[in-house]
Length: 276
Length: 274
Image 1 (spheres, rainbow over the protein chains, first blue to last red):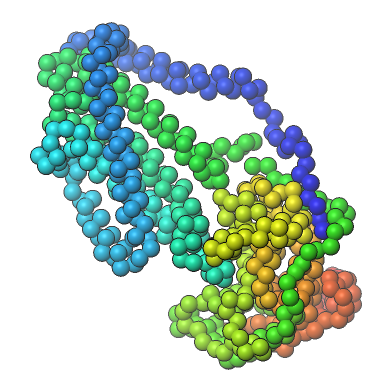
Image 2 (image 1 turned 90 degrees about the vertical axis):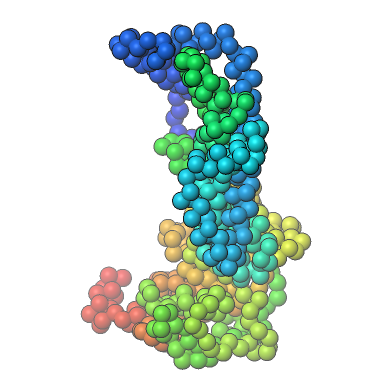
């Protein structure tokens, strides 16, 4: 019997940049990017000499952001709630649609064409109808966000479920696997990385759904606030809304990415392999 | 990911294998086997006998249908296939076969130990943890039982796959080039290990390496042609694993190469090179 003894880790660990230095760089990178973007913005304002009601300077937007933070945060609450609930509702529905399609071919043959046809409808055009049916409140915006992300999640998850490594299926068959156990212990976990890709895309587009819904008809939310401010030529306020929206979207994306990475540690990630 | 190489052979632990189940006591006969893809017969009228607890190797050029024959015996061919598979104890073969492929087929989200336990989990049975640990020890992976496949070397992955195959404790083991992706030294170690731990079972091993077949096989068949036909078994002497420098083994190798289609001139050159 061979007795495999792992060699000490230090022999295989590649030479690294000192930890503190790498950490500093990692923290500084987003700050440098933000600073560069703000500088570009200021340069454009200076060169074009655009008036405040067309393109406010970064400093003016900052002043508005501070002065009106109570109003902004109050409206942001609604948009964030709509986005997050819509994201989870849409992802759940997408997963629930993909599962039976992958498992039962009759369902696949009937549902897939419907799904494809549904993509021909411009969802933004549905927003007025959703507001009409579901009212001015949260429901119509949640529905809008959920509708937009339903398709990418369904397609990604369906793809993952229908591309189980054939060798695993052969192996499971010779092992006498039950259909249910094969699903829960092989096909589902194997499809999770694909589902995660769909969910990442969904995370990025979900705020769009909420904002569109708010534009069409609402009394709360950043979309509502933007439209309102735009009509009154308070462009600094519009920009303040956009900044909050950006900050939220980025935070949400990175949180989701973190959670997904932690949940799927086996996922091949060639970009993060040490020593490459 | 860092990989851990298995220790050299000299570091073998002294304990005996805990193996295994019962000796296989039935012969398997395939009569008039036929498998076709897209209307073309891969083989037909094929007869093959796997005597009880023998280690049979199946050689043949790439694409001749070795894997198809193996998969047919494993019950994995769904399409156009027929034939009689009978066992001398009059019970069906299906459900008594363990399968090992060229790829390790380890699930990347499960540790070595969890992969070894996969069969019981998929059948919703209570897993025998002690047996799993003992088998993991037998294939030399005790220290790696908690690692995921991405942290293992190629040789270690095939060891884990071998432990998973043994865990099934089936009387018949069908193996499809399980060692072909390994470096020569690891391949030799895995051959020895497999020959040892699979003793008592009826084994069919598909390989493209005549020396591998002669090293660990009780019987060696060549499959060739289209539709493929099976040559009579070559039955080398000597204790397994055999010495591949033995003149008898080299003579058998020349015969196998001839059956595989080598010309006399090629054979002479091969002999000169040896």
